[in-house]
Image 1 (cartoon, helix red, strand yellow):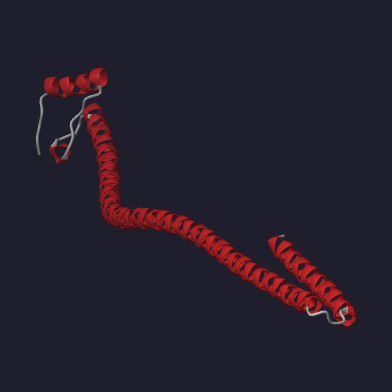
Image 2 (image 1 turned 180 degrees about the vertical axis):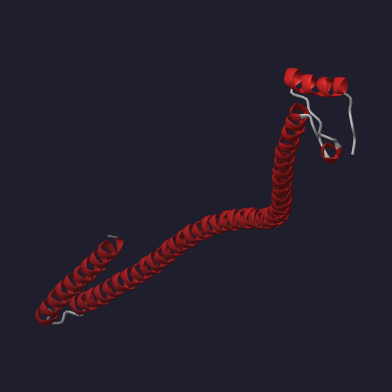
Length: 223
């Protein structure tokens, strides 16, 4: 047991009363408090305060430990979330690269499509030009064929007209010659004159009919 003199005891008590500072720890159980109620009351007060302080410290320590455990759990959760975020970031980067590749391929396909469209338009223009040229060539060929046909028809008509005229002239000359010869011979010309007149009229009529028919055909073919 620790025995203190009266002055020391009074100093401890005065320190507690003025500044609320008392002894702490297991040393409080070693002081001799017999025959000194005031010091005994001081020691009991210090012991009670020490218990309360220990209890508060223990509570704070438990709370700190609980907080530390929570912080550890929170740190682990944060680490897990961070890893998930990193994985998500990698996935986003991969997806971004995939989208960039797809976008580049889409742009290339678009440019190729535009090029093919332009080529198709050019081919359509060339095809239309070729069609127009073919139609013009067909029209020229038809015109040339029509001109050839008309030329051949004109030449044929000219030949027919010439032959018909020569035949008419020939028949007229022969018939006139026979008529003149008969007159010169002093023969009866009544029959031959009638025949000559009839034949000459028929020849002229047929000649005009042929010429009129040919001219009509020529006029119709011209229209």
